[in-house]
Length: 100
Image (cartoon, rainbow, N blue to C red; front, side, top):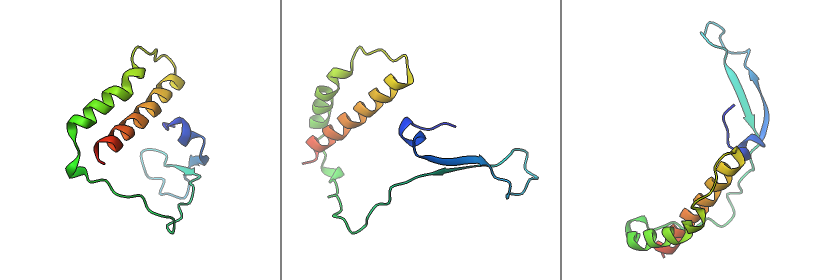
């Protein structure tokens, strides 16, 4: 099964789905995940004004945030996952800086 490390921890069950028409040329599978329920009554996040993003500020901020990501070994799944999470965090920070 192809998932992220976080999603892999949320797998409840998976297997072959026997209730589906078996005239297929493959066995149908099912995967069930445990999801947190999002309370819709909570305060919603403010929306970004994407049309007013300052591209120069975004580029400058992103370059600043990703400096620590250079020259890093990527030989294991854990290293790749960690780099991915840090890159996502850095992109979000750069967006935050450039859309105020």
